[in-house]
Amino acid sequence: MTAFRYLTAGESHGPALTMVVEGVPAGLGLTEDQIAADLGRRQGGYGRGRRQQIETDRARITAGVRHGLTIGSPIALWLENADHQNANWQVRMAVGAVDEEQERVTLLRPGHADLTGTQKYGFDDVRPILERSSARETAARVAVGAIARALLAEIGVEIHSHTVAIGEVQADSPEDSGEIDWAAVDASPVRVVDSDAEARMIAAIDATKEDLDTLGGVFEVRASGVPIGLGSHVQWDRKLDGQIAQAFMSINAVKGVEIGNGFVSAARPGSEAHDEILPADRWQRGPWDRATNRAGGLEGGMTNGQDVVVRAALKPIATVPRRLPTADLATGKEATSFYERSDVCVVPAGGVIGEAMLAISLAGAALEKFGGDHVAELRRNCRAFLDTVGPQGRGE
Image 1 (tube, one colour):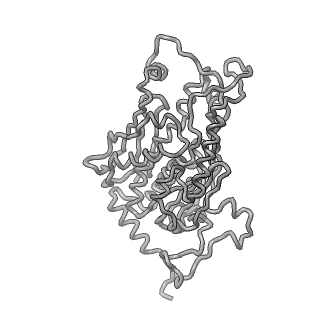
Image 2: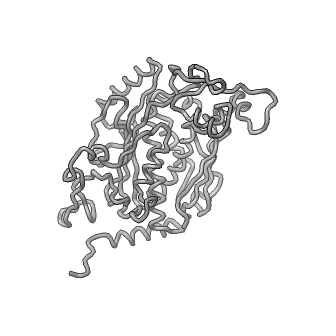
Image 3: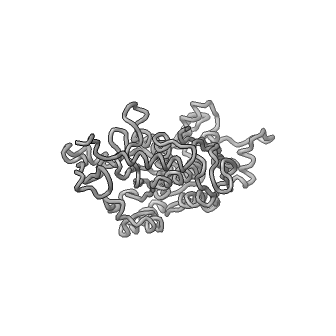
């Protein structure tokens, strides 16, 4: 069985984003409406810019699904960029050669891939770099993540997210995921649990917009129902927490990732940093229950049966309306960066993207552990393994 893997292709203002997903077993119920639900959530959130008003993201399934069920072959998705219909973009991003000379973008934007990309690939124009490095590509990953989410649901895994902080405004967050009203989180303009913090976050975004600036923050993603034993300790690249960290760090503007109480635990003694393993007479949530979940559901590179909890820090996005000092790519002389358009704050959307990346990571680990060419086989294999989980005595 091939592990869950995917590729995306496309540019921000090109005709479309294209995704190919491999490794999904046959028999999984999948519709375009399921994928559209997550794409819509990604487009929401207070602080988003005009691009989200132009696009109505809906991915077309063009291969790998028949009569609403996956057939075991690669799944292909096509997500049109509505903004490409603008005549200017059809010329600027034309696949074929164009007659008229195109204006080059040479004003480098700090915090973007502009300088490093042009130097690496030998371009005298920033456009080829900024089009692919754009956060528009994350729409493709959210579409792929929706497929991974549907697969994980077959073995009882659910994934949610919420905003922890925007700028200096910190939300109060309950320790136990069972205390979070996830429907209320999605209804919040900033996707936050704490209603008091919501108003202050909105005010902070408004003030930042007025100041022609951008604002970052922190989001948290939680996966519940994750079976024990996904991932492995035997090689560095098989450790699931390492795979998850890499997946989250690949999200545009993410500059920090922690699993569980990662950064808080760094300041505590070991006796206060780990999770007590409860004896059987105190188990409430199944075999090998814990008193706390400071580890965030992963120990030794493997899931331990607790919720997987991941937090990511998003820097303020680099497309700043207040143009920043920079240098010109063509001349090296002093200049100010150019500004096309941008969001003010993407933290609420970042959580939805984080859900997709965690779903993709866990789906790959689940397929590696349980296998199966049909979802019914995947479910059976998972149940059979879980039946073996518990004290390993030999009749003593």
